[in-house]
Amino acid sequence: MAKYTESVCRLCRREGQKLFLKGDRCYTNKCAVDRRAYAPGMHGQARGKKPTEYGIQLREKQKVRRIYGVLEKQFRGYFDKAARQKGMTGENLLRLLERRLDNVVFRLGFASSRPEARQLVTHGHITINGKRVDIASYLVSTGEAISIKESSKDNNRIKEMAESLKDRAVPAWLSLDINSITGTVINMPTREDIQIPIEEHLIVEKYSR
Image (cartoon, rainbow, N blue to C red):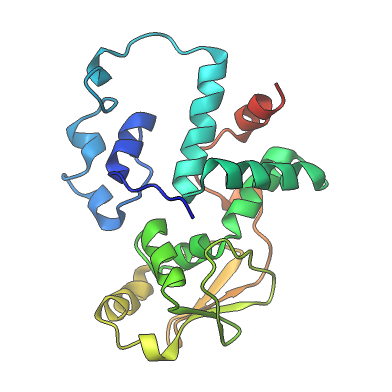
């Protein structure tokens, strides 16, 4: 499967804001957005042209794709699925993205970033209801319990993560048991649970052209 292999800090600089793709580094003075607050590339500092309506819609779509780590074809698939569901397409889209297993692992605090969460999933460190699941795009459902595989709890990085869980706040649609390092999906996410500056109506407008 194709994947992005270049510096993720370039993605944040291109969108002009922190997407928190490097975990704890994003909160330090080493963050690329703080150090170089302009687009990457040799003409990055020269970009001052007012964006078009289409350009604004494109940037919003690219921003959301990059936040959740989804490639173009897969993102379009989520959009088409959201459009077939009842309710507002933009909100349906965000709810689908929030239900991705790698995002849930990140939201529970089992990883410092979504890329790290994706790595935990694909390397087989995560279980759902006691069964190992290594598909990052798996959509969680109400009642499912997400845990660290028992044999993985001796991993040094996972031990560090477990120690920091007491300071972690999880979204209202999830619950977290720190002692067993287990999170449970108690509800489906709502738009109010997604505290990310996203204007999903711009994405809908782009795909509606």
